[in-house]
Structure formats: C-alpha cells, structure tokens
Length: 192
Image 1: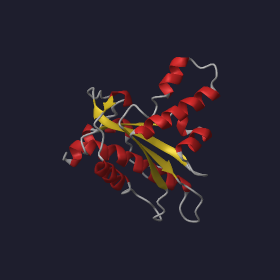
Image 2 (image 1 turned 30 degrees about the vertical axis):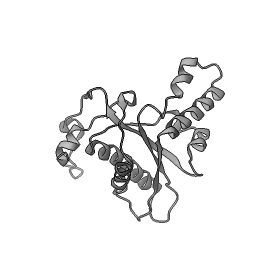
Image 3 (image 1 turned 180 degrees about the vertical axis):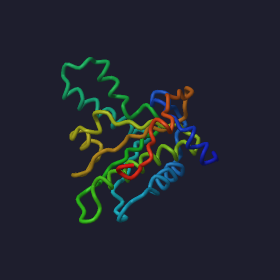
Image 4 (image 1 turned 90 degrees about the vertical axis):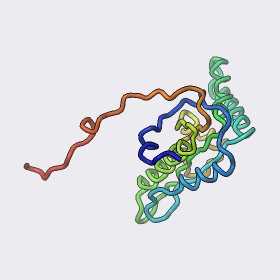
C-alpha cells in the first residue's frame, strides 16, 4: 500500500480513454465505496449515494445516452454520436456519485453537496490507493434531466461526478500546480 502522503502527492487524473482492464474486483469496489463513505457529514444525513456502472451495464447505459443525444441533437456529427456510445464504456468501471442534498432545518444544502464532493474525491483516492487510475468527469449527462432519468436519478438528486476507474495505459501527465504562496493568505484583524 502507498504511504498516505505519497498517495496524496502522486494522485493524477488519467483520461478515461487511457483506462483499460483490469478494473477493480467486486471486493475492491466495496472497499472503494466504504472509503468513499468516510467523509465529513454534518448531521449524519448521508446526503449522497453511488451508482456503479460495470460490465455490460456500462455499454447499455452509453447506448441509451447516445440515443438520447441523437434525439436532442438531430444534426450532430455522426462521429460525436459514436463517441457518446462510449461515454461510460471507456474505463472498466464508472462510479457515479449522486448528491441527495435537500432542505434541512439545521444542515445547509451547501454542506450536504460538499459532503458528496468529498465522497467523490474519496472514490478517486481509494482507486489510486488500490493501484488504479481514475478520472472525475461530469459533462452534459450530469446536467440533463432526461440523462439523469436514464441513469437512475431520483427526484431532487443530481450528479456530482462520474469517476472512471481502470488500469492506466499511458503515463500520467502532471499539470502545473499552484505553490502555497499563490493560493494562501493569512488573516489578520481589520485595521492592522
């Protein structure tokens, strides 16, 4: 297992087109979900859930999304429609993170959404810890009501992430990261 600090320092996204089998086993998927569930959750609301797209379900979901895309975009280039047929089928596994944030007398919805975002990041980090690579995506399917219905959203839910997971076929390419000096300020009392 990777040392925790090394794990955090070495995580990089790898595009879903470069994620191949093998993907996580059923036991590893359960471990990823268990880890993803260990996030700050003010009020213990569990304001998120997961939808797993594995095996043939990835292809079936992608076919349904491609058909929806073609209906909504009748003039679309056939190459784009063909790409939609691969949307959730590129990597061996896709875990969708769903926000169930809802009005609550004590817990702001924003905190509930942040909890779901943390769950998505934990999916990415757990995959990395298990030796896989991942890519967090959204895209039009995260915001389209008809796509949400196809993919299993319930009323009031919305997608936070689609995390594509697999074995990398290309090395990760790091992007420039900000230095602490670029993103940190220290608060001082007003007037000083």
